[in-house]
Length: 580
Image (spheres, rainbow, N blue to C red):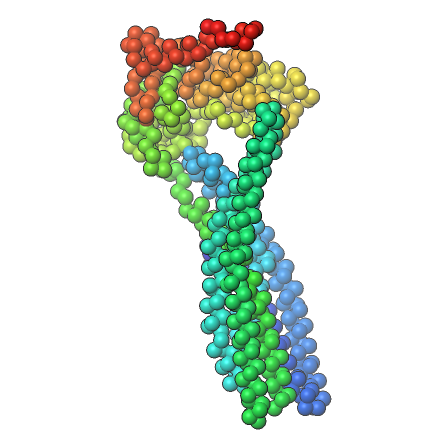
């Protein structure tokens, strides 16, 4: 465990951990010596040797004062090491996370990542703060006691030593039982935390559609599973914990019985036996204290293992001799890509001309969004290449690629700040005037006009004070402010109200004017006005051409257009009946 902490921490934290460990070893040794000094003190006291008893008492007092000073220093050192470790973990995890492929951040992984960087860090920093002392004490203090017991009576020391391997094996078994259920407990806790946040954020939707009870049932099920996982862990770990305590108590019983046998045989005096039994109690005490330690230690070890696994996740490699992007033409050259073993794109080849609109259509799951994300290098392709301006995106630095690309996806996330703060994400150095101009072009100024504070009005956590369409307009304002020459757009207007839909279409026209646009198109006007249309089916391009060319061909696109045009033509009249 200590070695794992060293490997994940930086040099400064390693030095603190090493110093704290040395101090704890000294502290535990002094504790053992203090216990050992009770033997000659009690022996002299019970035999009426007052002066010798006073001498041993003075020696014990000196050891106690030295122990108290060491304990004070190690207590502070443990907390300082824990704080330094937390800082190092946050810094190292943060530096690594920002280098991971964007495609790595799926919903399940994001939830686990949130728990790892919160409760996981607390678990690990608890090792130097709270766990190292009892762990070191459980090892060093009994070892010190046993060594000195050999000085006083080798037979009682041997009796204590014989039981030690059994205690250690039982201790390890107890920890293994905890580890069997810890993964279930961790997964259940992550799920419950996610459901609590989801339930709080979705209150407006759930109540509006009368689904509050269903939403609560989902949360309740997650909490029930968390409770069940905790109970299962207790039931599984209890036999190991009870067995360890029983073995330790049996070890003490063996020492007592063996000592009584020596007294009855006249081989040692009663006073000496009493003193040695007091020492035996001090030998057993830290072992019993360790009974509760192994389970907590395993939980911390598992959190540390998850951090190691995260840090072992390879980021996308940065090119050594980076190439510059010379233009905005986008080319897919026989691209193949699979995610978690599932093929998503197969032998995809096309060229999207510079300063033109390329629309992608196809059924759900055909690979449309995956295609956009490969351009932004959320992942690297398995076969073939994606090129921008003739440069393979794998040969371009991340900073240069992101400077050339603006991405607007359906899932919009807003930070808990003001409208202006969220727009400024597109270009942090932008002036207030530039932010106001981007807001106007995206028609965000209309949203700001209805809110106290205007562009300085808060949007709430994850943009909770705004509708989906309003959040989308702010995300487009970000992209307008960034002003990248390539725009990747996963158009999402089908579920919006007419006002937001019209506003977003105006914003998109402002965003894409004069840019190279590749869009997953849902809006009929976007599809029809595209310079080139790609039809995807099961990860392959099955048709490509202009709108008129594909309609004339009369194949899949023509059927798609006819179906979408018919659906768009339906309206609800005043009597609630459909009319075309």
